[in-house]
Length: 424
Image 1 (spheres, rainbow, N blue to C red):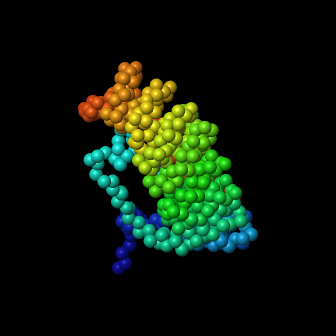
Image 2: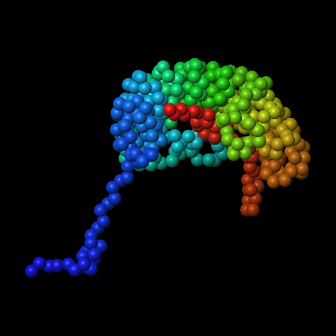
Image 3: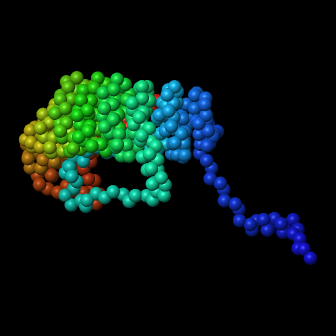
């Protein structure tokens, strides 16, 4: 006799049956999936293919399956300029990491702390790498598809294609290092956007200094201030390896203090900077990242301490702290900033003076005057400087705060500031 299920029992049996696993949802843009956009990209309509490349670029990493088609479009669509422009950008936005552009170094070691870290600090360790089951496949795609296409795109007759190719190499970060020589050559290109993007990319692709120091040094004198600023950032990212470019950095800083050039598109108003930054800011920070070997540049840094631009004075103070050379001259140059009209500069100047310990004894009367006339962090920093210069430990016990470093910043706040994405 066949068993029969009444409706109630049927529902109960169905409830006991495991539900099928939901299918992975394919990424989409404007109602079309990656597969559908890739089909359009592989079609024959030039306008629609350009639109598909832009859509895949906006989807980003989930559109990795389209990288072969995009690479082919960059190098093969000789008559479709708009397609090459969008495809060159898509290769970086999909294969690279545009969402990590804020990961770069944002400032120098804090004043009051040695440039190589606290004396007893354990050596810095890289965070453990996250498991990436697709890492090898991704690396192979970059090596075999993306890099060759972008390197060829840097020689494209269209300036917008070249500019997007440089930006995509920035998105690839260290994986773009094989193209460092081509990026350095691009610093002499007529396209301002390309020069700006190429200089910014050289700050993150981990280039061989021998390939790039000369071109970056020349780029500090670029007619466009943001190109020069990106070059200064790139030299700063090289740290001590940028020492051979010290003469170019010094000359650029002298020029900019005499005739400041704005880098207003490098920092948003929301950052709270009281005046627009100038090129001097990143030049000073680059000198500071070279470290003690940049001592010959102190005369130019001292000039920047007297700049009208507040961010320039701020960055110059950071550079004095990081270079930490010629104590007598450094203390004499910083001392007037204890009476600066900006509170953040007064507080930072106090901590910079504390870096020189007993060599800054001549500053004690001015520091005591600043402490007595101030409140909050400026008063706190003045007292900390007095203690350090006098050989006393800085009190940081229960209920007390450690000295602060008001106003320390980098113009970029990471990498990629001032770069330009071009869409068609």
